[in-house]
Length: 356
Image (tube, rainbow, N blue to C red):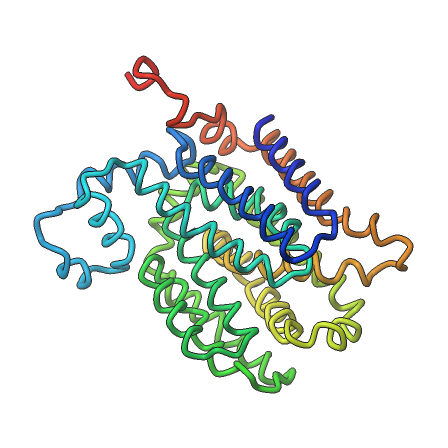
């Protein structure tokens, strides 16, 4: 547990200080390089490691490049094919995937005035729990974040391109395609409510034929009896920032007009998935990973307006403290954390004896 907590603390220390955009970009580049090695060179770390290793070794590579376009979710098959065709090993698949994930995460984090704090809050769940134990959806979530950055900039074509690209890695990402119709529009409460009602059936339809597989492969075998509790805890975690958002909503609308529509929309979407907590915590578990980044953006962006200016430094520590408590609590109580992440090992420090 110690390496993960230490990395989180250092990320938070670099994130709580207000920096110029150039300084933030430089520090983010350094952290990106470190996290790329941390995520991308992991050796038997993460509950996805064996599954994706088996897939990498057993995919039929004789069909040729074009044949992979006909497969379901072809993006990840093509990535496997690309790595294999260059004669590279499995670690390169993880490394390239991690590079894509981090580029997308860091790009999204710069929607905030404190991008390094956003990146720090990404660490416990988006980087460790998803990026190091759910490679396909992590890549898909990264491309969804790129689409959401396009949403805030009202770039419709790039939004569609990134959502379609995300769906080639994990088809559930296509659930965000209807947001295209809300880009650049005055998003009324009625439209948001309508979008929410469309959102939930889409989630059920797109994940319906996969829920049994996910339940067996990623929940029962990994999380065990704590699966429902874990999903609900993470759901509460992404709800907390919206309580702050509602309190400072008018201020945010005035001072952050570019990001307000996205924050307001995702508040409705986050509430809309609540029925999944009753009918399928597995589906809820999957959707949380898409919803959490905007929740983190809301938290970091809104909490400075929650308290009086003289308490600014205290207020920005609140998100870091909450996610820090979650990280420590998860490592202290989860069989998943203990079996999949401890001890941390890297390809950079593994000798031949350890590989046997």
